[in-house]
Amino acid sequence: MKLDQLAKRVAESQKNGREMDKLTISIPELTVNQAYEIQKLSINESLTGDNRFIGWKMGLTSKAKQQQVGVEEAIYGRLTSDMELTKPVLKVGELIHPRVEPEFAFLFKDELKGANITAKDVWPAVECVFLALEVIDSRYKNFSFTLTDVVADNASSAKILLSNQAYSPYHTDWAQAEVTLYQNGEMQKRGRGEAVLDHPIHSIVELVKMINREGLSIQAGMIVLVGGITDAVSIQASDEIMADYGELGKLTLHVI
Ligand code: OOG
Ligand code: MG
Image 1: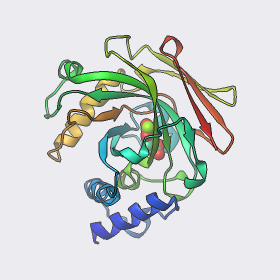
Image 2 (image 1 turned 135 degrees about the vertical axis):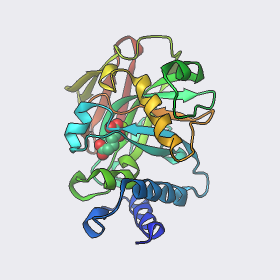
Image 3 (image 1 turned 90 degrees about the vertical axis):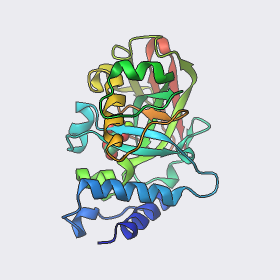
Image 4 (image 1 turned 120 degrees about the vertical axis):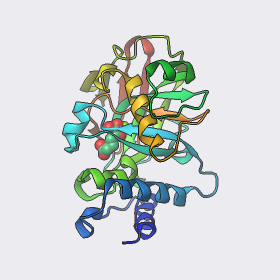
């Protein structure tokens, strides 16, 4: 089994928005570590032109998300600049079966690394926090996968929308911050930051420990998505998605 060939297959599918069979159908012995290697190689494959590596995402950090996809372990993925929406408009035609979920994103001013960091090490490294909508789009048929498959497919990453307003990390208690997700004016989901590993800061701690095993770190200037606060909602052209974070503001995405 050639990991670089599998990575090319995944990268093609991500680039063209074309669905593929789960890798574990043809290679049941594929390990999670090998899947992370495929993730790294396929994302490197995508770094052409202006596309840059801009940070990390955590996934499956809430029970709601784990139950939705049937994988009970937190995972990480890589974010690149072409995933960031510069306008609150999503072209759905480029995607397979997109879903959207409300999140928080942390921007770092200092590097964070090590196997033994705790929350007290994370806070001083955070520059600011954004409200975020993540669009995920598993490249696998029927949005169905194993842990190994979803890791190889970069944790289903597709697009991210960040709020215009950034907040001091000390602005509010991010565990108590509440979000309600509306689709075309209809309430779909509601959750609090504490759904993410009891406090979103723990998601950052977990990420640092996980990437440390590969000798990697969160670098200064990088962004980290902490993981969906609620489970994700399927979206289609002409939808209007609105995440209401109470006093923190609202984030709206127009799907075309
Ligand atoms: C995996 C990606 C999960 C999150 O925030 O939990 C994720 C998936 O649900 O396809 O982004
Ligand atoms: Mg997510």
